[in-house]
Length: 125
Length: 229
Ligand SMILES: Nc1nc2c(ncn2[C@@H]2O[C@H](COP(=O)(O)OP(=O)(O)OP(=O)(O)O)[C@@H](O)[C@H]2O)c(=O)[nH]1
Ligand SMILES: [Mg+2]
Ligand SMILES: [Zn+2]
Image 1 (tube, helix red, strand yellow):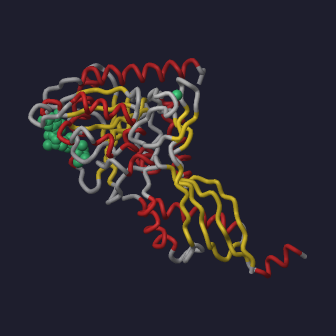
Image 2 (tube, rainbow over the protein chains, first blue to last red):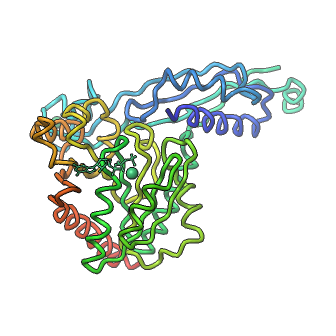
């Protein structure tokens, strides 16, 4: 179980970015999670609230976009989504293939932040 | 108050990845081949390493080992009997090694001249797969007592590895392990992976594994020389 430590890193990265942009609160985090990341989405959701406590992310929503494994086939040249990670074979031509184009991501795509209206007015005027 | 969308596009483990990249560059400058050994608890990482360290030393190679352990120093003591310099990384309950742990333990440890550095990861077939340690090769162990289906149950770890070693083959018959099926399952999740069959008890297969590692180090050294670094 390393999802808590992943959740802590996630919160750290998001909080830092939020702070740099003058956020008072983070309301939502969009995460891309590859099926070969080694991270369990449910366990991560569970750890997220704990990790977010006492930070700008407290009470925020975690949205996880699960990305399938995509391989590039050296035999036929196709880029294909693998229907299962228990069989690394090109769905197009059947050749064994393990060259990954996608699937190992644990990446924050974007976050939704709240910024102070005072600060907002300051930037407008 | 206003809500805004902020693009981030940053890996959650980017800090570990950066540190691993630093380590990889350092290992390159040292010309050392770094081998990260992963498996479930008790698959025989320490037993295999005891053999490999002793044998490599007998062949005149310089070796060192770092060993991660949740609480004890048993494995470090076992490995130290080979005469190789060994350091223990106590993870205090952490289920995997991270790059910063290696950096910390390498800081005041002069392993400058070694040709091979082995890292025994914490016994766990899930968590260590996400953490790059700057290694050249990741070796996943699977003992014949664990069952042929483990690569299919833990495809993430097996897929992330470069070499698979089927251990405890002296027990294969007693466990009715179907070695051909085990190999097939490994190759299904990681086509083309080099597979070795070893026994730390009888010494079977150790020489082949060592020859392969020596070959990889020779290739690394040649590649460094060719790039003029
Ligand atoms: N028969 C036989 N037993 C082995 C072999 N390799 C290891 N063992 C036994 O398996 C048990 C576990 O071996 P270890 O080397 O401690 O395994 P490990 O992967 O280092 O274990 P952890 O570090 O705790 O995860 C010990 O009782 C070893 O004696 C082998 O090749 N043959
Ligand atoms: Mg051990
Ligand atoms: Zn194909």
